[in-house]
Length: 325
Image (cartoon, rainbow, N blue to C red; front, side, top):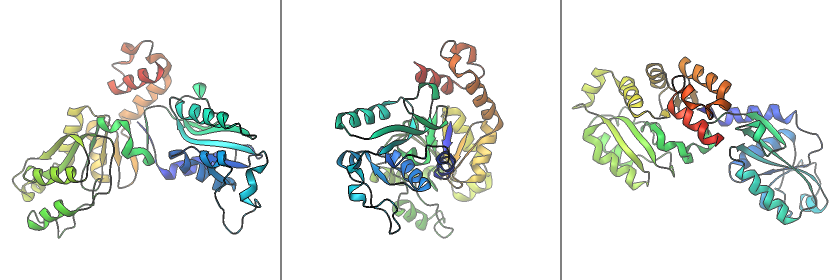
């Protein structure tokens, strides 16, 4: 899995902005996630910004007091050099749809297309690409809506809600009130594959009720089976338990709140773990070697997947086949 957070996106766009043509006059974002990339690029290039609808209607977003572009209300009354920007390109459908929309509008502008991350530079429909980013990929800004969530293990406390305070974590009535009343941090629209938590089995009903109340769906809830908190702490197997579940499910990713546990899970399983505490992907050496093998041979995997079956995890071979077919 290739992961990019907003900080990395910003750094990539900052470098990219220096390489793009200097005659660009307007940045246009493809809704929704393309607006984030377009906004950052417009700021770094000090250019006006709008979205696709605004371009077609002749509207440009208002700027600050030190606007150097003149009257933005009439900015699009004359032909401009326009760059349409999206955050990523996988199938090319978003770029194609944007082109169809623009062509149908019959605009009198010189329009080019750009994507920050392209799955395959040689197959891209964009005029400019910041970086080639091999599939599978996941971004901080689309994490809760990503189709891979169905193949993902996710921690609960620290991910879906704040961790309980020491006072709340009493394994008694205060903890029960925490389980009932803690507000959610995420509202995923996709079904989660496995919820893997160190909460105890005796709190299953309250946990299930909380997820149902907030409209968050999942396939399976896996909890620790100890009589009480003291027994769980004495066992000291939080990371090992999560690692065992991760391996057993053959999930594509584990999303964990604690950095210490994320590093332990990655070390034990040899698989990637996304840590929400530091907003980074923890990658053990084994995964790095697998991704290097994948990158070198990705064009051959479709032709002869059995040849790579022993070198790469099954999900990676399937992802390559899905992309190149």
